Image 1 (cartoon, rainbow, N blue to C red):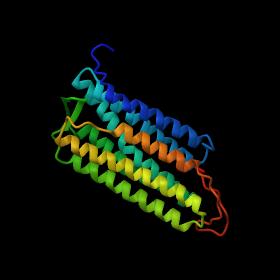
Image 2: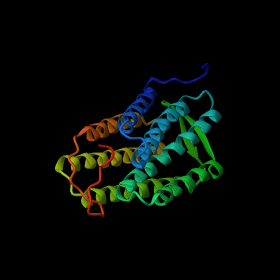
Image 3: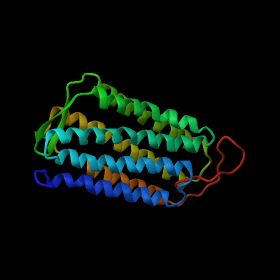
Length: 241
């Protein structure tokens, strides 16, 4: 590992990756065959891998290798919100799986564009490598995609909470999950924006992800008391409970 830049502050990303993995295991241990659990599995893996490759791209021995790690990192970051949206959509409509794939399509298009049409280069800072691009379109496209997915997740989550007749404890569970997702994406957008202007800004992304995972674990741990109907006149179970 000669030549790698292991800056102590960047180890926060490995800690947050472990937190995301533990959260994912905690959730999907229930019934990984359910489509909601599978979507959450991909959400958790995308979150964990984004943190691992973020650590690698900041610590890489060369700028060229850092660019490779950064592209992979950005790909997983772009997939975080689509998988969470797919998990929520699977709760609202279990029969139309094609809709779930449609929800994933915009992110995949942005990922493909990032790999083939976005030039990246690195500058050195106090916390390792920091990304720069000469593209005028990609930052706007990526930020718009993030924001659109965040709005879609909030809308889908709000619809789910309002359409089901659930006890207050279960309502609190899903409100906390929505809050944690909002904090996560807002922190990613804010940190990336600040670091484009101030490359030596000390990021707290790994700490934020760890806190978000803790909030989600607490929310999921809350006991679910269910008496609800979603579009039909029969009881159905809530996954991730």
